[in-house]
Length: 173
Image (cartoon, rainbow, N blue to C red):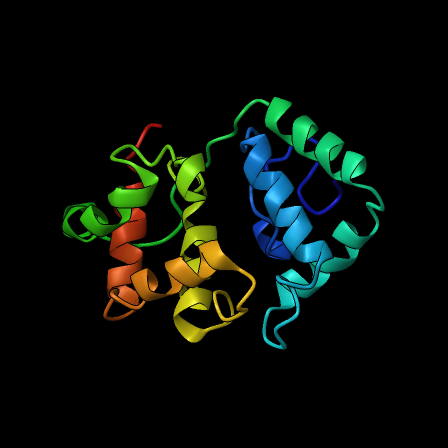
């Protein structure tokens, strides 16, 4: 995992998120989306286009499952906040998010909603912006992301994105 680092802690410089301890079901699903061309194909998704060949290097479903299992086995790593934002203003915005991601950001496999509590703020903000711009959530085969895109569009501007991400940073799943 050169981009995500041996401990899974990620690299903001490379746009590689902290994946340590991510749930196996979610990692498996995302690797399959990259492999199947559902993610990482939009011309402005530089990080996704970098990830797609990595997923394609996993030729079998068993390989994907093994990587996903390994990622979940890594001890979670929590980084300090790196973006400005007002968690109090973000709390009200998070009410919509909690319907799928839960009150503590733990996620919900049945809804396809990943854990977002404890995820790096820079990564969450980047993904919300990608959903807002249609870089994610535009592929008709990506049911979960198609549900997420309208939710991201409820965030009026970048201040709202930073505020909700600041609030998510206070959550302990």
